[in-house]
Image (cartoon, rainbow, N blue to C red; front, side, top):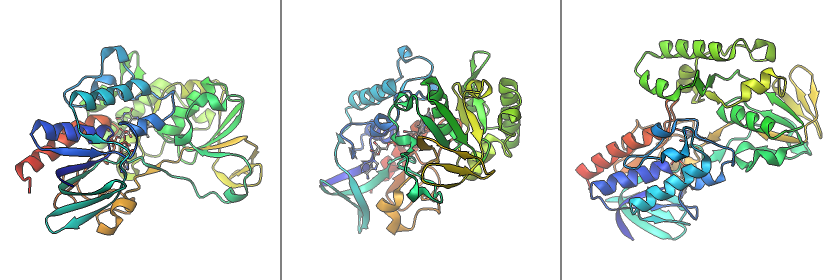
Length: 373
Ligand SMILES: Cc1cc2nc3c(=O)[nH]c(=O)nc-3n(C[C@H](O)[C@H](O)[C@H](O)COP(=O)(O)OP(=O)(O)OC[C@H]3O[C@@H](n4cnc5c(N)ncnc54)[C@H](O)[C@@H]3O)c2cc1C
């Protein structure tokens, strides 16, 4: 099967680049392993809302309807991506999993579960959050209680009445902690190794996401200082509740370790009201307990881990020596990693990953249209 451009993945990044190519009259197909577009969002839990504001989270050419509100729900965002694919009449081929990608004399061979495609250009849009990362906890194999990555939790309500030990302090951990208390877990311990940078979603009714976008060209130190003072103003001193001030600011942390700031959706209120407890790092697990670094022992019914994700690109492209030590493309944004091989959606940002899809898509589409090969 021959086609000018194969896009791998029908999430927001893949759909945006398909629409941008179509606008420039470049034929493309999108291969998607799921049975519908937006497969990643369908697997995320039902309480999830975007923490980036609606009007800075949409893709070029189609607004998310006002009726979806300021903070769009998971289901409304899925419906939006479905509409985006339909409105642009994108050629999305579902239940086709790409297994690997090989260079050929004049382009690329894309080997899938439904046959092989030859393409001049391949755009990888498989998402940076594809594979849940599990911590290597001593004693994990002997632990008899359920252990679940947060990405596998469909409804926070499923843990109502349970004692939960949540490991992690990134955005996912902070977000799910709020929902777990809302849904009345019996007890929530949150094991924190590194204090998260927590930002309010809005302050005095003013949403902060557009502010981070407006200030994105300021020096990092200034933006970190500003973020710190906003957090202090919004939440006060959280040391009495087990959270010392973070050692670095959110923008520096994002740049140096790829960890995005956590957005408060009720977490801090629950923490200061004593509805969840911050505890030390887990030292090891026994059959029924977690023994913490400070010697305290807790006995949860469920161990929930929110320790991040990896891209899983090694399986697709590991043989090409184009990935860094974290498994992400070494190439710069919107630059080909090799001739005719592009990536989109792999550069997360506090100003919003979704809002970056449009500019990345336009740049890649323009480069391919200029030099179709
Ligand atoms: C819980 C959570 C909440 C987030 N909330 C926000 C937010 O509010 N605002 C924001 O800006 N960003 C947010 N992000 C970050 C980011 O914007 C999202 O992860 C977004 O879904 C990324 O889009 P994507 O298209 O790059 O990847 P995905 O949405 O993951 O899409 C990738 C697609 O590729 C398919 N695929 C993967 N491998 C293959 C293969 N081998 N063959 C065929 N198909 C394949 C997958 O099935 C999937 O459909 C969030 C991330 C997470 C994890």
